[in-house]
Length: 307
Ligand SMILES: C[S@@+](CC[C@H](N)C(=O)[O-])C[C@H]1O[C@@H](n2cnc3c(N)ncnc32)[C@H](O)[C@@H]1O
Image (cartoon, rainbow, N blue to C red; front, side, top):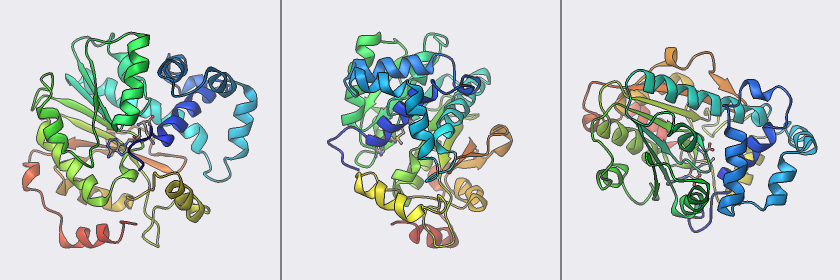
């Protein structure tokens, strides 16, 4: 992606959330307070002009998004389900004893900011590219800092997650943690995704869980988002945020096992897929993650998936 510019896809997700707030019936799915917090952040950070946010909240914008749903069927509403899925994972993880929440590629997501006061004994961490993270930090500063929310500006393609977190004095190595990677892994190379999962297993403790969303791989070994896959791959590349990684749902278990995690579909609830993305949850494997190595079969699959 273009590293010097704030993420366009994070902006798109945030505006989508604001517009979903204007769609009747979506309040059933959207976590409470998310629409107002996101709209306020977009303006306070300078990521969006006030008039853009006002338009985004209008029924006309709902119709506009719906008119484009033919390209990625269900993807507009899917943002609400995705947010609900991630928040549910975090709440359940905390209820099960997690004391840290780590959002990777957090973009303009406001879950940490909203939940930090409710869970004052939990430390929330967010990592994103400097250009996006700095803009968000500016908005959060205006909206009110949370003592237990730490925004980290880092390119995970350049610096290892382990090094980033070890340098952070609030991070507790080996603590029970909920990791969230919402709409992130498709933007990383297969080597980077594997390294990320392995490192996440290294830095977290027993009982940790990893909630993430991913795009499935199609028969042609490319990310598969349906009929308009070719156009979408081109568009993503054109905006500088190409989709690089995908996986077949039936191969996820092996991939996770080799990366220090165990697929835990029973924790995902009924929300297996919305729009073009699958939702997955993994729990940390007892085996040492750093010893995990991909099998030859999976290495071959991964090779075919770097576009
Ligand atoms: C589609 S957005 C999703 C944002 C947020 N998770 C959400 O769903 O609202 C993807 C995010 O991943 C971030 N990202 C992509 N590659 C990254 C990298 N190598 N290091 C840090 N962040 C990255 C982008 O900056 C962007 O904010």
